[in-house]
Length: 317
Image (cartoon, rainbow, N blue to C red):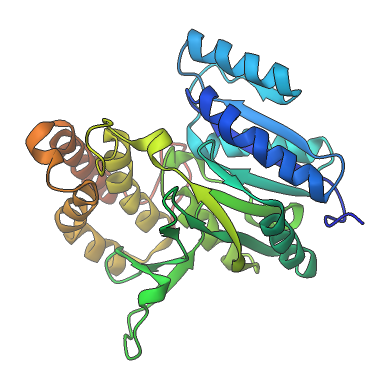
């Protein structure tokens, strides 16, 4: 008996990662088809160069996947929007979003399907581990005082700070109903924080978030965001820049003026915290973290100053 009472599509946003698609997405598609028939696989291959595009074409053709080929890099959120729009137009009722460097087994897919079948306006995520078995994501809270993050497991009794939980875009089960409620991802983020924004808008529109503890996915973050192999903890320059920048983009999208001012005052501190996620050793071996810090802080301050209208002319609340 099918677990999904409709049609499931698997959507992956790819950027120069054809090897990861072969290693992970082939397995994800096999696991998904073990629990429900008619699963479609859609790869949105953001432009990174002709050689990478040919590699994506080859792996998609070999596995009978739908390959969408934007002529530019549409970012993660933009790529998700392209892929999910195609999946729903093709008749999907449920969409699994998963990173090219992640995989999930059939039992975990069953657990996600059960939760979203019971409540069609629930956005669901598994617990995510890294390739060494360490917890990578098990729910994160956004602290509204200053825009810092806290693990769900570190909630302390008596901590009265307001917070909003969010689910990681590395692996999400999205129903058609959730997508229609939320309006999809905001592609102005380009990379990072778009899942924080999406989670908030799902809840604001009347949906719910579910971290499904029985479900597990594995995410090898190093597959897409390591700066250099010899710097085990270091992230890419883009990781640092967009995490610094997009914190303020979220603030001006969703928070009142007093909160935006608090978040703006905290930009240097929170930017340092982002950089240090990659460890201190990287600071001795590369100028990229310093460059990302300066660019990100400058752009975050610019966004805070221009509160009111975004780059597309929309009014921010």
